[in-house]
Image 1 (tube, rainbow, N blue to C red):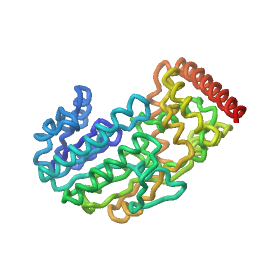
Image 2: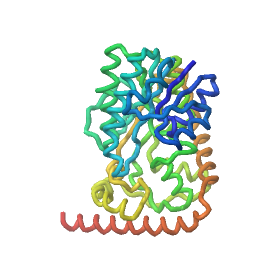
Image 3: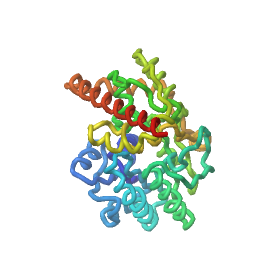
Image 4: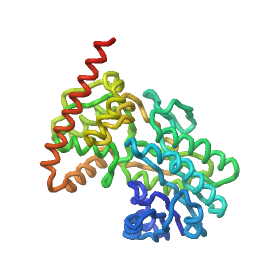
Length: 357
C-alpha cells in the first residue's frame, strides 16, 4: 500500500508517517526543505521535494497512491504567520485535493479542525454542527473555508474525501501554545491562569495520528470524524498538571473578561518583548471561548480509542523535562522578567481603561 503525506514534518505528520511505516505502508512525504527531507527520511519515508501550492511538484510522488493524507497547514498565531494562512490552508488544500481526485486516488483523508466550529459556548457538538463565523483568528477562518468551500464541494463532485477534525493536540515534539503553557508551568513561570474558563478538547498526538489511519481504512467517504478527547477548562487543566507533577498551581486566576480587551496591547508587547505565542493578540482574544466537540462517531465507526489524559500528559511532561536546554536557568530569569513586565504593562492599560469608562 502506498501513502502520500503532506505536512509530514509537523507534530501529527511525524507520528502518522511512523505509524504508517510500522503498518507496512510505502510512504511518500512532501518536503519543502532539505531539513524536512531529512526528517521524513529518518522516519522511513521517501521524501518528495515540493510545496502544496505547486501541483506539478507533487504529481509524480502522489501518482499510484492508495491513500493521500493532507495535513499541511499553517497553525501559528504569531502575527507574521497570518499572511500564510490563505495560500497554504485554503489554496494549498485546493491544489492537493484536486490533484488527488484527478489522479484517481481511491481514499483521501483531509485534516480539518474543530476550529471550524468557532466558539461552541460550552457545548459539545457533533459533526453535524456548523457555524459560519464570526472567526476569532485567521487560522479559524481559513480552515473553515478549506473545509466548507474546498473539501465539501469536491466531495459533492465525487472526490473520495474523508475529513478528520482534531481538537487540541499535545505530546512529545509539540511546539504549539499548549506546549508553551506546559513548559512554563514546568519551569514555575506561570504566575497566574489567564482565562481559566477557556475550554478545549485534548488528544494525544499518537492517538490523533492513529485516528487518521483508521479514517483511511474504515471511514465512510464524504463523512467527517471528530478526533477529540475530554473537554477541560484551562483552570482545571492547570490544577490537573499540578496533581500529576507535584508542582504548586498558580493561585491567581484572571477571568477572560478582564484580559480579552487587552488583545490590541498584546499585539504590540508580544513581538517587542519576544514573548511566547501565548501572549500573541489572537491567543489573548481566544481566552474564555470553547473549542470543543465530541468524538462519539469516531469511537463507534472507526474504533478510535484515545488514551487516558493522565497517561498522555505524564508522557509529555517527561519529554519536557528531558528536553530542557542547558541554559534553562538563565532563560527562566529572562522569561520571568519579560512575563512580569508584560503583566505589569497590561495591568496598567487595564486600569487606565477602567478610569476612562
